[in-house]
Each structure stands twice: as C-alpha cells, then as structure tokens.
Amino acid sequence: MKNIGTSVMLVAAVFLAVVIVILPHNPTIPDNNTQNPIQPPLNPEISQNNIMNMDNTNSAFLKVNAYSSTILHSPPTGNGFEGTPNIEKIISLFNSYVENQFKDSLIPGAAVVVVYKDQIVYLKTLGVKKVGESDPINLETIFQIGSCSKAFTATGIASLVDEGLMTGNDTAKQYFPDDNEFMLQDPVATQEANMIDLLSHRSGMHDKAGNEHVLDFKYDFGETLYRMRYIASESEFRTRYAYNNIMFSLAGQSSAIAASTTWPQLIKEKIYQPLNMDSSEVTYQEFVDNPNHSGTHVIYNGVAYYVDPLNLDAMGPAGSLSCSVDDMGNWLQFQLNNGFFNGQQVVSSQSLAETHTPQILVESNPTMEIWYALGWTVVYTQGRTFIAHAGSTRLSSAYTLLLPSEELGVVVMANEATVGQDFCVDIASELISIFSQNQGGSPSSTPEEMGGTPIETLPIISSATDPLPYAIDNYVGTYYSDYYGNIRVEKFNDTCLNLYPGNNVDPSPLNHESGNTFKDVYYGTSVVFSNFDAGIPQEVYTERWDVNGGNGTFNRV
Image 1: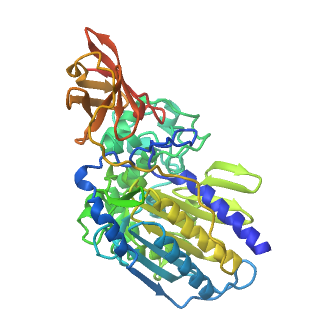
Image 2 (image 1 turned 135 degrees about the vertical axis):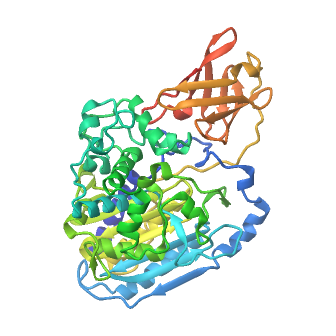
Image 3 (image 1 turned 30 degrees about the horizontal axis):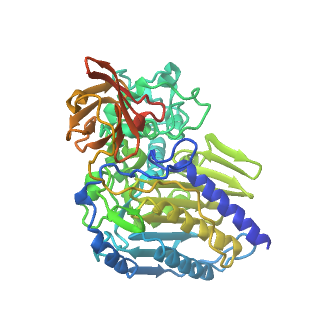
C-alpha cells in the first residue's frame, strides 16, 4: 500500500505541473478557470474547406485505431524506487494502458517513446496522420510539439555557452541594442533582462502577452517584439513567474545573433545533427513540405476534424519545432545521459544541468514545489525530482517527462489538442505510476482541463431581434491600437461585419447582437462600437483582445 500511495502523489504532482506549461493563450478559459457553456474554437481560422465532411467521419474513425506499431527493445535491469523494477512487466502493462487510452480517445494519431537507462525500451505509433485517410503514423512521422520546443532553444544556448559565444548573463540589449527593435516600459527590464531571465519567464511581462499578435494578427517576430513596449509590466522584474513566449523567443533570436546564423540553422547544427534527429524540422514551411508530417485536428461533439496547422514561426524558439517519435527517443537519451550521445559529449554536463536548474518559483504547497528552469518545469515532490514540459499548438499536443534519478523518460505526441493534451499527460504520468508501484495500477485521475472545445464554423446570420441603430456601413473602417496595431472592419451584409486583425487575411465574422454590440462568431466575445460622431463610431472595444494586459479598445483611423 505504501507504493500505491506514493505513486498517486507522484502522478498528482505531475498533473499539476503541466498546467503551467501550455503554449497558447486559450480565449475560452477566463482568469477564474470557469468555462463558458459554449466554447469558441481553438483556431479561429477554421474554414468550411478545412472541415471534412461529417458524413465521412465516423467511417474514418473505424480505421483510426486499426493502425498500431510497437517496438520493444531488450530492457536493462537496475535498482528502482524500492528494489529492482521489472521493466519488462512495466512496459507490458504500460503498452496495454496506451492502447486502451488511445482506442477510447478519438484522437486520429499519436506516438510514444520511453527511454530507460540509456536505452529506448518502447516505441509506439498509433492511428493515422489525417482523419479520413489511411496513411498510418510511423516512426519518422513528424508532429508539431509546441512548447516542448523551449527545451531545445535553451539547449542550443547551452551549446553556445560551451563555445564561449554566450553566457547566461548576456542581456537582450547586447543583441538588440536599437530601441526601435526592443524596448519595454520597464527601463530596468529593458536594460538588464538577460538570457536566464528570458528563458525562465521572469521578465515581469504579462503572462502570455504577445500570443495574440502572432496567432490572431499574424505579425512576425520583429513587429510583435516592437509592440511589447506599449504594455505595462505585470510585476517587478525578476520577482514573479509569468509565462511569455515572446520574451522566450527573444532569447532564442539572441542566440542566433551570437552564433552569426539563423535560429532554425542553429537548432539543426547544435542539436538535430549531433543527435541524429534526421526526420525533425524547425519551421512551419519545413513541416508542411515534409511528406511524412502528421495532420492537425480538433475534436468536437465526438468527431475529429482536420484543420490546417498553425504557423508559429514568429515565436519559433518558443514553439515551432516538429519532431518524430524516433528522433525524440534520441533527445531523451541525450537529456538523461547528461549531454552525451552516440559517443560524443554534445553539450557539457555542466551547461545542460543549468537548463534543469530552477530559476523562479511557480507554486508550492506542503507536499510539492514547482519551479521553472530554462525551458523546463522542475517538480519536487515525495523526495523525487521530475523535469517536464507540455506543448500545444491548439491543434496538436506533446509532453516530455523525465525522472533523472531513475534514468527514465517518456515523450508522448498526439495530432489533436482539445483532448490530446490530457491524453499526453495522462500517458506519461501513468508510466510513472506503473513504474513507482512496480506493478500495474489503476488509471490515473484526469488532469485539469486545459483546452476549450471548438464550435463548428457558423454561417454569418444575425441573431439580433432589434434593428441596428445606424446603417451597417457606418461601422465600416480601420481602427488602431498602439499595442495591437490595426483592425479592419468590412461589411458582409446589412446586419453583419467581417473583422480583419493586423496582417490576417482571414476574417472573424461579427453578428449583430443588440444596439451597437456585435458578437464574434468564433470566440463568442463582444465587439462594441461607441463614441459616435454624426452616426459614425470613433471607437470599438473588442472583448477578445482585452486579455493578458492588453487593452481591447481601438480608435478609428
């Protein structure tokens, strides 16, 4: 009974830790973590052409679970939690759990790899690359891994530290000295924020600030970084953890300048090539051009829909990588073997250990502490140290979990995100549960909800019963915010509008609700026009972008 109780606590701790490492801002979950009864889409750019015919979906799912490949290697033996674990039995129990969970998940495709004592002891591919098709996931199929990319960025910088090209104390201003490129409202953070600050999310910037610039406004990194000057800090510099992809990406782009190369090339030269990660890619275009890439999906009302993948290159160091399960096995071996791989010390053990070293406290209670290191979360609980990170692109999921004391690691990837993130965390945590019990345990409890459920693309039909106070043409125009830039509002019909944020060529439909209030069809949020002059609104408030420290108010240009 002692083992079972310990394993439950360990699994609970791992589940709690994953909450802090999700990549994108999810507009469906407000600050109090209570969800609206109607959930907007994770990707607002879902078009009718991107959603497969519902008549074909159920038959497609009959094929999804028909494809499964398992590779088991002869496992090593060694001392475990309390005695020597029977790793063959553990892997057998784990495999049964993986297959059962996937069968019930409706996820089109997934992959799992486990490393134990410097050997890949388990490789599993499940399902298909794209719902409705029969091409199965294989060992070289690449998945978008979202924020699991962060550990690669930190490791790339560690390699430059070994070469004397960088230090953790290098400031962002050393690499972006021009105020027209980089400046924050906090002058101390502007001048003193260094690589450790940026990689550990302690810059003082708002949690997830800048995500909307990339995901909704489609700005590049330079444009997004420039606009960070228009938002006040959330906290005093170096005093509080707040997850920020743009500040993290600033560290990655700084490393490229230090190495006189591009960030994608840096990752390839310093990590992919020495680790023989031959299938993996760095950029969005490389991902979609690779014929062996997995599709990206959402599940709604028990049905999976294919959706075009998101382009995250503008915050690439924080989330743009795509990797195969075979390659991720090499990554796990490298991480668990202190930077040593295939007879080569790729990164010094000292520099790699720095990436695992806690820098800022995230959360603590009497039984657990959660810290953020450099691209990793570190969890201390029950006398054990876990190193982990989750990744989500809103349309795909990944989770990496290391237990260095036992030389045990696992990566789980899925080509869906509404339930995929829970699936990945659950699978990884169950491995720890089985391992710690040294026997099969009951399924782990469900992790905290981390993703909203998408709605179908809706036709633009006004639901309002009262007429518009002014002609629809009066609302048309361009509106501006220093922080967000322009939004363009165009007429769709006599009661409905289309809103185009920034460089995004795909509109967000707005249905008239009442008075001067419209409803964003995709997000279920309000868009309110006000400050009328001769019947022409001079201001518009967008609830959707009144988040993460940003002000959702735009003024007519």
